[in-house]
Image (cartoon, rainbow over all chains, first blue to last red):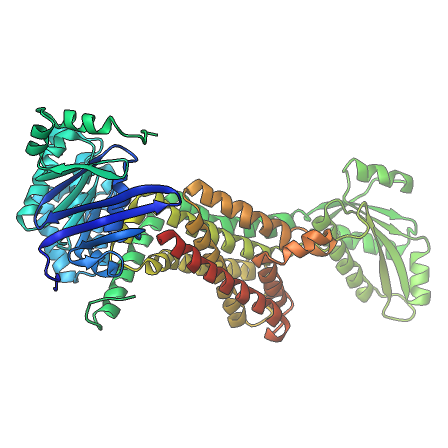
Length: 251
Length: 382
């Protein structure tokens, strides 16, 4: 696959989205390296989701450029979709389908061959320890398991980049930690992870973190460097100092 | 649209995607017991309710006979009416002046007046007239009573043997009380068909698609390489199949249980129905594109489609009697055209030449809705 001379998984240059007079995302620029875990932080309404939708090819930028997996978000959305995985803020599996049926369905719409689906599905069910639950409806599983399954389904087709939109909402820190073990395992296989979150303990797990305020990227660095820059020892304090100046409220 | 995948892989891959999707959609439908019950229970119950239960009410209807003749012929006629399972003759003598009271109190549903000198005139002139009075506040019942009484009376006229010229003719002279213009009883089977297809295709399709938006799974689907149009198509296919099953069930019920034969061509009827189903599905998809919640979709379907279908399709209320504004409005309701088509083909046995205009209108509506869908869908994605 031609990546036209770039080694970045994601590359954004002045990426902007306007809705009428409202500028949801205001000329953001950043690069995400291959295999990196990139945290995308910001208060509600800061523009995280809009930025992510543009990168996934769901929303057309009003201005600026972005390449995802080497493909242009304006003209090559089909190629982008084939190379990314996505797990949404809201729960993204079907509760009235069994574990097996969910896996088969999502693998099916990515056009994977049957043989590969069967082999990989059995492996996955074994790895997640869902052997007994394989033929039970997903609706009956604990939330933590659902989220782990949803993540595994999002990377099932072997994408180069996976986008996670607040993936761990509503679960306890221990389950969150287990979820992150899955993320580390994925990056070990070379998958790039782009994750939005508002849990600041999760920010610590990322290689680099960007913090959005009012549609702009207010800070971008490793968690350690950010803490040093704002002379504090917690991401909480970093986030608070930046978000304090926000004009867009938590409407 | 520009892509970098080698051609040739796309065709089979899309077929596989579609298959996975349709299978999943069937899981949804088949596991939702309540919806399934409504889906298949409703048409059966409606057909039976409209046809069977209502028409059965004519059994043992109390009828008063005012026999002013009291001769052999009138006695024979009364016995014949009493012997039928539809009527029970009230033997108590009711003076003609009290009949109105008996109707008002609901004691009787029908009355028959046999004029004096009945047999004499029948024998001498070969014909005579009796008067039937019915309570036409209930149109269906009144109509049914009338037709049963007519049948019994003309039967009697054919069988009666007296000296003199034969056969005799007894002309029942009808008077419909309380509703003298007596609108035609609705032919409910075409109406039920239009209503059920409308419910399944418009409402269920719209709700099923909007449900994915609400659950957040639509995002996941749109991020997948599956084409958005294919996603929508895959959602509509199961409902198309279910509608066809429902349609066949209604037809089978009306032919077997209700003895309502399909006079026209069955392939023509099925073809026209498929066209109407497509119209409805397109409408359901349009509603799903412009609404964001299941409630909104359901509301839009009910107000936008079901209500006009019930009121403006001609099924419950004759369109000719409506104010001009409503008559004009009725023209944009697809079920009005479908209802006419089904009535013409099924009941009157008409061929395509009689319904080409209606067919063209439905076709035009479908195309219009389809273009609208495509445009709205593109706007949403931008």
